[in-house]
Image 1: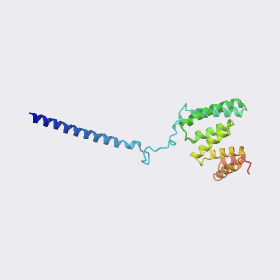
Image 2: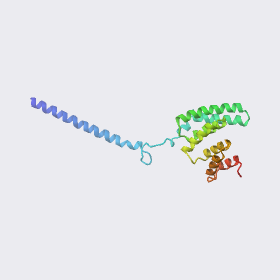
Image 3: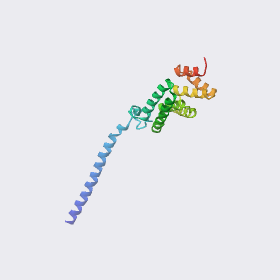
Image 4: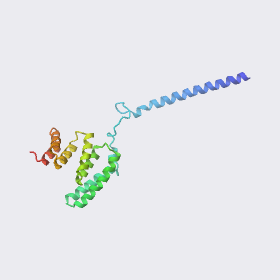
Amino acid sequence: MKVKKNQNIELLIELMIIIKYVIFLFLSLFLLSNVQAFMDKDNKGAQSTGREDLSFLNVKNSNYKKGIYAIKRASKFEKKNKLKKANKYFEKALKYFVSAHKEYPDNIDILNYLGFTYYKVGDLTMSEIYYQEGLVIDPKNNFTNQKLGEIYFNTKRVNLANERLKFLSSCDCQEYLDLKSIMGKN
């Protein structure tokens, strides 16, 4: 009777080991079959830089959208020569864009808006910093090159402004014509 009991225990242990292997096998197959869900179109896996996902731009109450709205308001007041109100909205826009930049530090649009807004409130140093940061991310961005060229020209660094103008000369774009006009080159 004791031998039969030992055989039953051994059989039970072997059965538990087999069940463990079967469960392990099913879990492995399940997990491996779901790996495709994390692959991109080139089967590289989750290697996104985040630049492809611009869904934050469509959020109704995002800091980015609030900043754009504030810039539009400021521009309207600026056109009406109501500079105090315009400056108030430019300052609001700065707060929104700084917050958006904290969330999305590598977004070229946010960096350009920061550069533009700092330029509008008269802080050319901060404007230059954000435009230079934008060029690190996208060195061929025409808008960023033009605005940086304007800052260089307005701060009497004509050689640097000429470098931006020379870069833009190959693009056959409005940014080149605008910078050329600002610099007084015909």
